[in-house]
Length: 142
View (tube, rainbow, N blue to C red):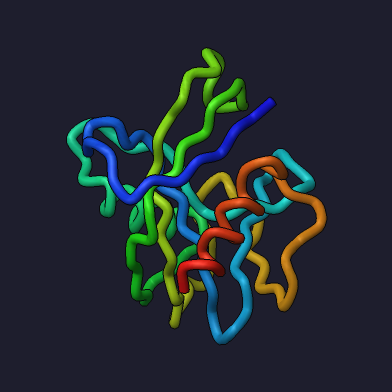
């Protein structure tokens, strides 16, 4: 069973992921991966030597094609349990951010097939035990 927790802060070196809840013109922004039939919030792994907020910006740009946006950190989250990106099940930490996207590139050049703007949250999530909880936390904090 996966467990999601939230923290105000943790030591920076523990932050391995960044996830960016995004909106554009009042609509939720979700990505559909080329190899999946589900939707997900943009995010990914921190690269060696990368500032965690830079990770968030890079992943947002790569996965959504965002060209102009404002991004801000919300909180730290952790996931305990085995997932597609964590085969040990140990607690892993990430930075949860929010971005308002005002301009997208014309084409995507990533593993994402498409970016979808939605009025409502999707029913078919890639990470159904994690990402809805992250959005719920964002809605509580905003």
